[in-house]
Image: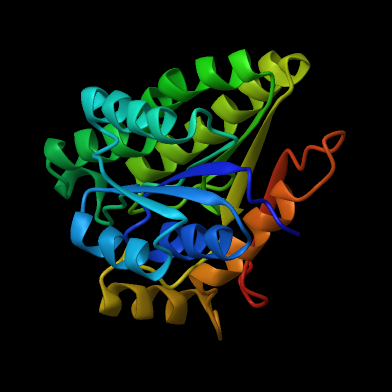
Length: 240
């Protein structure tokens, strides 16, 4: 389906799920504002889709950077049809062994970053009378896991936050979708840490970022009368 008139803003777009989503949407005709801290990676994506992708250096934990990035998107295209809040950080260790800096980093990026982005984008969506927000949470937004308590808290927060806003903004024609991935091979974990995790969980083949990107596109392509309010995507052998 061609979406040449639609504009999507994707955070955490320099790698993993964000990169795969930005690339898939650009390939399906969206204009894509790809936002992340690592500008050099975003520029590679922009070179691949020179007429479709705008590279935006933005740390979602910095409210001023968020507002500046959203301003640039609106200045260029005049609207934002889709917001994919994907940027996230995970630190795995016993709770008492983690420094407070890790707590702040995860809360500011995973939770406050989503709030900052929505405060910047939602007024434009309400004004234009339409929009779709995709918040990328995690299966850890539904089940608890030791060694990742703060990360789990942020993702539980995103699940509840998304559903509350879905109920608040549904009559304003703004859809809210919560995507909850299982184990995905991304830069969220160091390579060896991830290999240990999937082996411990008995997962034979983890998901790839493109699997989540495809799920996001599926949600976006539903008719206006349909909101896929929540979608969980797990590896076939992941029990949690």
